[in-house]
Amino acid sequence: QVQLVESGGGLVQAGGSLRLSCAASGRTLRSMHMAWFRQAPGKEGEFVAAIGNNIRYADFVKARFTISRDNAKNTLYLQMNSLKPNDTAVYYCAAVQRAQSQVVLVTPGPYPYWGQGTQVTVSA
Figure 1 (cartoon, rainbow, N blue to C red):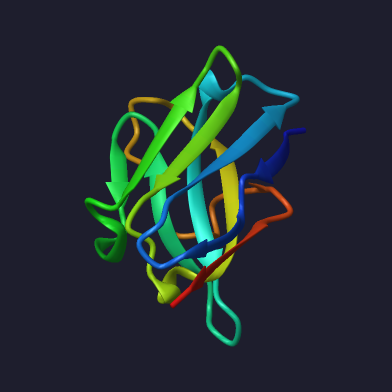
Figure 2: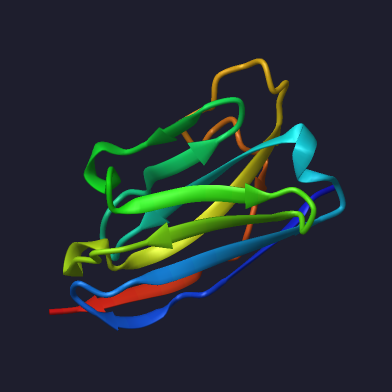
């Protein structure tokens, strides 16, 4: 069993930055593919970024967000710069046991482990 706990969300003005963290326990991240998803009020959840043997980003976050991981700390990060009001959402980290030779997954269904989410609010 894997437990994921996100932190780092908050209220920020447009153009500002936040760094989200996702601390994992129960299994080492070295054997996991990890991802960030988000869900805005009244909208469906959407893929943000994923990291495994490769890195994928949603088109709307390219060049603004950076996903990274620190295997020694068993922690996943999402550095978010140049935030926009439509980035407002609850951000969730997710994990799946997956061979590092396989490409990352960008849909939520295959990820069995999820955190509780952290709220990000960007004011205009």
